[in-house]
Image (cartoon, rainbow, N blue to C red; front, side, top):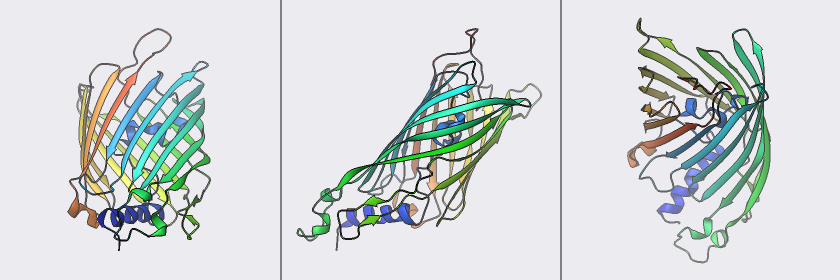
Length: 309
């Protein structure tokens, strides 16, 4: 019998690897779109850098922590977008670090742009099981860490955006790689292909346009897991502040809030509380912090503000 940290770590690893969505979740999904859909690359008419830190189930041993860094920009008269995505995810004893390059080609369709995106890169996976405490010091299954593995993958996405709305479909990782184990179990916890649908719009709630509503959704589908839907409704005040509730079906409810510190620099925070599984009894909720900065602008040197997507 292993101690609490081992049980929690392995339970989380099994839960996320076999019975649930494997890709990291984000309450700020509408601010972290490049991590979801490569077709988003270059869509903000600026060199945009976004950093996000998520601490999930605070106070629960072995709970997930995730950090992402994305940057992207348009080139060649904004017909092409290039981007880079870096993700670090830790769940119990399992560590993943992913590096992906993103490419998008855009064509004008109606009043908006249709982008076809490609994503390709590497995912490094390791299990630090040697550092886990057990009641038996001679358990051979926990004497060595799993050797780090570099797993290549690629995906694609389609993204359409106009002034007042956007919609996208994507599958960021097409290959279903297997992880090798040092134990007699051999390969464990193969990656599952995920399918994502995103959509959002913005409209005025008063005549002056000082108050706006931006409803968004993020739908996740993968084999062996229930369909999961994120719903968010953000209220924008004077195009500077935003606040609103969120719901993740079968999992969590919460709230987001943020502000544009300048026309270039945005700050966001969210808190969500799990209700769909037994972990809510043993944690203090989940927190996210989002920072975004736009470095360059259009050819005239003007800031395209505000940017809602």
